[in-house]
Structure formats: structure tokens, C-alpha cells
Image (tube, rainbow, N blue to C red; front, top):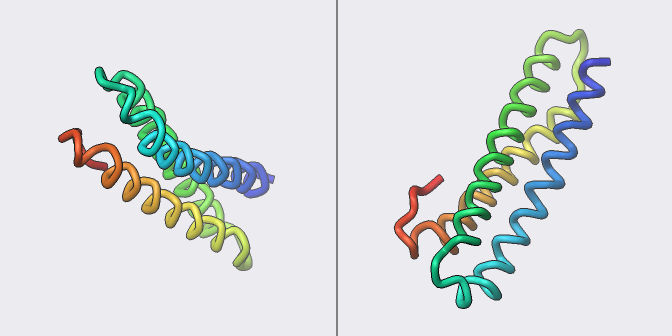
Length: 107
């Protein structure tokens, strides 16, 4: 039961990360030119940072549950790998589109 609930959390995290990646792209294309004080940029970076932390924690918990459970659940392990890839992708997009050009701390 714990694995099922945690798998749902990880799936939700994956969906959020994918959505944020699209948001970062849209921001850098559409909003960045009209955000001179950088308020929206800082909010977006903080939202991404928190969701990356949440996704990483959810994935770690699911992996620990899977490691302790009998048998092997390749679908859930694959989901964890997919979340890890989404985190890397979002960090890369943030660093390229937002952080480096504005000398913010990189992820």
C-alpha cells in the first residue's frame, strides 16, 4: 500500500516537473523581456526549486520502499528514473534560460 501511494506522489511530481519545464520555456520566451525587476523570475525559480526538492524526496522514498519490498517492480523503478531525468532537464533549462543570464545561483 505504501508503494502505491508513493508511486502516485512520484507520478504527480513528474507531471509537475514537466509542466514547470514548459513554464520556464514560456517565461524565457514571453515574459522575460517584460519583467525588468525580475520578480516573476524569482518566483518561478523558487517554485521550481521547491518542486525539484519535493520530487527528489518522493523518488528517494519510493526507491527505499522498493528496496525493502520483496520482488522487483520495474515500472516503479523506471518511473523514478524518469523523474530523475525530468529533474536534470528542468535544472538545465533553468540554468540556461534564467539563472546564468541573470547571475543567479545555479541548480
